[in-house]
Amino acid sequence: MYVCICNGLTDKDFTRAARAGATTVGQAFGVLGERPQCGKCFGCARQCIAEARLDMAQENIQEAAE
Image (cartoon, rainbow, N blue to C red):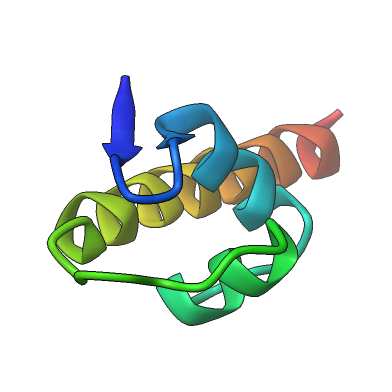
């Protein structure tokens, strides 16, 4: 799903940025080589990043338990 129409960025792009280490929307744009434009995407982008970070934390817990 498109999250940032201005830059054509999808939820998968923000997930990829989070997996690359981005913890904020600004960092995610940097990782993706883009700059925020209108800012309307920030809420959804934050949610994508938070979900990706939660998934990564759960993966780490599962790996540690094995």
